[in-house]
Amino acid sequence: MDRALFVAASGMAAQQRNLDTIADNLANAGVVGFKGSAQTFAELVAPGGQGLGTVALGSRVLFAQGKLARSAGPFDLAIDGPGFFTLLDGRGHSLYTRDGAFSRSADGTLRNAGNYRLAGITIPSDALAVTVTGDGSVRATFTEGARTLGRIRLAEFTAPEHLRAVDGAIFETTSESGKAKDVVAGSPDGPKLHFGMLEESNVTIIDAMMQILTAQRAYEANAKGVQAADEMLRIANNLQRG
Image (cartoon, rainbow, N blue to C red; front, side):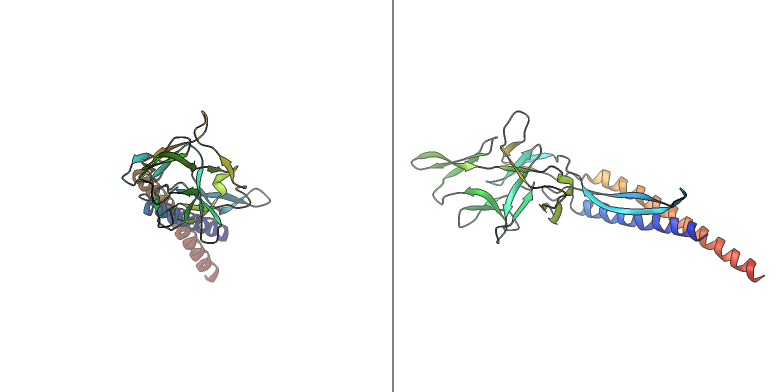
């Protein structure tokens, strides 16, 4: 009886974690560059082979490509393919994102909404217009002509699913993800940059709602298992007393 109660209770706990993850995905479905996560679980098995319930192994980020959409921002960028923009925080620590919604600050650097700086590029104050080609080359137009300011390099990882989410669509490296490797955009089989576009979240509301319904039904089924095990324990106790 106790084993049945534990199995059902562990299933309820697992589905609660699953629901929390799906709800977080749904809440961020409108965030540019956001990547949804999924919980992973495993079966607890006794030495004799009997199942003892479910254990949560944690969540993993799903880096499927989001839809690219036209944007109105003058410095917006989207990555088509694998890779991340490299950002720098106030201490010079590297962070990584797929969110390419940048704006020019007073010092000429390109920054996102969190005030993280895009590495490697500074726009002079006298630049009249800026364009970015598919290979990441940044060209600016001045009164005396145009010139290339630099090149945006992307970062790739051996195991990006092990990156740790820091804030919404911003990630940092872990020992499991491996170190960042610089990648030049525009190669035939590599990522490309699209100027004047943004990558939307890869979370779709319809899919998330279907996942919630499935998880709720699984939770309810396990809850009924807890109730059944509890009732059987009550009957057994009454029989012992009688």
